[in-house]
Amino acid sequence: MSTPPEPDPSVIAGERGRMTNLAYRLLGSLTEAEDAVQEAYTRWYAMPGRQRAGIESPGAWLTTVVSRICLDVLGSARVRRERYVGEWIPEPLPDRTEWPAAPLGATDPADRVTVDDSVDMAFLVVLESMTPAERVAFILHDVFRYSFPEISGIVGRTPAACRQLASSARRRVSAHRRPAPAVARQVSVLRDFKEAWQEGDIKTLVALLDPDAVMTADGGGLVSTVRRTIEGGRDIARYLTHIAGLSPDLVLLERTVNGRPGLVAQRGATTVTVAAFDLTEGRITRIWAVRNPEKLRPWTTAPAHP
Image (cartoon, rainbow, N blue to C red; front, top):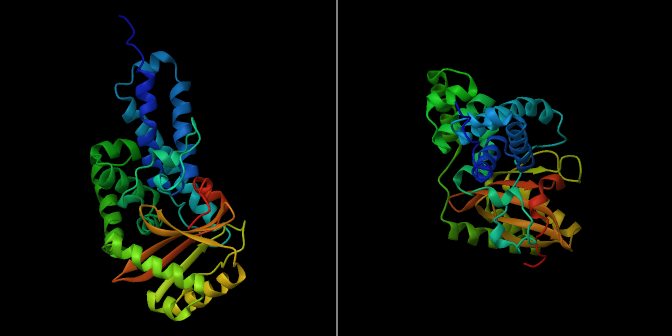
């Protein structure tokens, strides 16, 4: 009996984008997602050719391996994030159409992540509250439309157990997510917010912030930032005007962050902060400010103009 031919290498390479999309949603970290996908491809090419040829669906094999790697990473991430300096926020994604084209031949995993509601920062933050198994079952079923029998083979639980995991995760999402306002409305509010921040206009900032607004910053211990969550619109406004006074050279840019309007702060040509926002009824309820430079890698080619 002749040995079946190995899968076309271009088919295998073509799965990388889908794998990166999956891993980013599972991990909330572009860096860790890229590592997980690379590890899966390393395992693929480490197999003997005869074994690769016997795999009926390379895409399904890669999905299984990437998901299992991510399960392991999520388990260890809980321990690592307990030791993390300050708050941990998911790694923000840019809309690459808003930046200059990458150099010829250059690739970035951010270019391979499809931006939709399942990478919205508020959504990713809710995912962080789930168990690893809940997160994997929910993302595979509700976002990537895998059946529960398929998920069962990936996570090593019964289809019924996987259904329960996804249902529990779905309840968490429903309890925390609110309908997003129209994009035009979000852009208008953040433009007013940006101008008030630059002018040190506390009164306008307070008016734009919900009285119970919450701001969280992530410096990872690598740069200075507030390490406690700031609660209350008035306290957030005071803090932001204080920062603006200390850093008059900051340039604020209106940019898309994880598919929604956000703000980017640059000093010279270097992105130093990426801020994502959540709005309810036209007022800002949550601000996530990422300052950890290790999480700003996809933003490093940004231009320094408003």
